[in-house]
Length: 88
Image 1 (cartoon, rainbow, N blue to C red):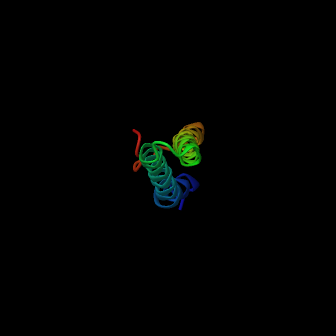
Image 2 (tube, rainbow, N blue to C red):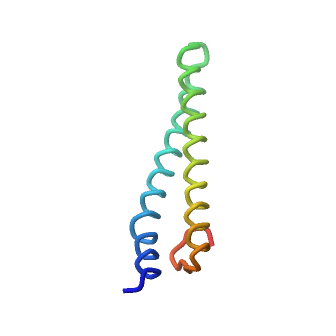
């Protein structure tokens, strides 16, 4: 098996699902933070926790999208075409 095909399989079957899972968790944290922020109208501590969860969710989603960009950059650097890439 050539190295390009091996790296493409690792990307397609291991890295992409892990990154998508982490993105989904970050999205859930983001929505839970929004729910917590809206639900607690008067309690300042709950609103602050909601704000933190919103920020952490956004940060997590940004990091996961950046990870896709880094993987794509590495694959393009070595001239490897990726077939199962989510953001083609």
